[in-house]
Image (cartoon, rainbow, N blue to C red; front, side, top):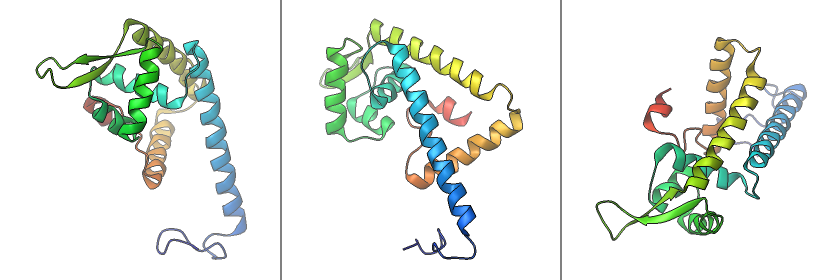
Length: 171
C-alpha cells in the first residue's frame, strides 16, 4: 500500500515498471557504496569497530566533549545504546568519561589521544575516498548530488547533519 500523496501506488502510470527498477537499482548502489566506504574507513582504524563507533568518534572529534545525551542525539540512537557504545569505546581506549568543567555532577565523553589519532586516520581515509569518488565531478553536480542526498535522507528520518558543528551544518 502506498503512502497517500507521497508515493504513487505500485501499479500507477506515474511510476512505471522501468522507474521502479531504476529506483531499486539506485538503492542497491547507495547501499553497496555505503558498505564499501564504511568497510574502508573501519579498516583504516586498525580496530574492530562498526559504523556507530565511527559516527560517535566523528561527532566527538567535531564537537569536543559532550554529554552522552548529546552524543545520542548526534548519532540518532537511544541513550541506552550510547551507554553501551561509550562503554565499549572506553574499553578500547578511544574515549573517556570526565567530569564537566563547570558542573561536577555531569559527566561528559571526550576522545582520548588514541581516539583523536583514530579519528585522524579515519578522516584521512575518508578524504582519500572522497577525492577518488568525486575527482571528475563538477562543483555544480556535486552540489546537486548533496542536495538530493539531503532530501532522500530526510525522507528516511536520517539527518546528514547529525554530529556536525553548526558551522559545518551551514556549509
